[in-house]
Length: 331
Ligand code: SD4
Image (tube, rainbow, N blue to C red; front, side, top):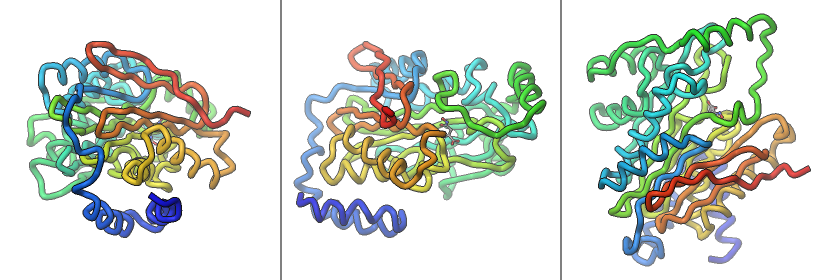
């Protein structure tokens, strides 16, 4: 593809997701029959996820090895961290907002293009599974707050207090001098975003978080926003984001990466370009982290971030590796 046409297509994302999506879909339809990534031969199931979430990624990989579809493997994988009380950025045990409420956000996207999301959920830990119910059992894509919770209880989800003693103690200490300053690479683990490709070659994913620690009440970041925290196009690939959600949302980061791959970039090139979009428009990038991981239809993986310290997990053929990621800020 000629460079000029490539730039024309990709810049559409900055004038709006809806317009960009429809125009790019025209391009996609034109190219559908000949797209090089649609072959389903020789594919090995694979799971990747943000940060060093060894157990979560192993769980997803084992599910894929048993033949579980990509969406259910992703949800089973991220549930490990949603239930991990020691993880203060996902699920039960997550850090609260500045008023002491733990509020969870999550979304899922399936290989057929369906998706579901929940935001500001206060009393249910497995919010990625809840997002799948929104996708499958409602006419909607996203439910928020009490409505999402009531729907969850009707589906049999347990009501639980998500604020653990440890998270409460840390919040009380924070309140002594309440400065809102998200820390780059918090303890080296963070939001979990996961992408799986199953034995049929189908790609799906999930993204789940308690969001930024001590955020304003009602704040929602990129993680549950389809196109920002997660995007899948089963003909092309998928991407997920972690880090400062506000900056990911401004560039519709995961959608951008998938569209860049559609236009011929490798997953690595696409992740790098998406980070460049952020750092070139924002001279405050030294103060926040953004990291992306992406996988294309052939199972090729890429990842890139602003600051050193981000890693991702990769499960393939029974091997679960933690991979160090190249970064932009080398100054
Ligand atoms: C958010 N992106 O709520 C999430 C938080 C995160 O690394 O991933 N932090 O903005």
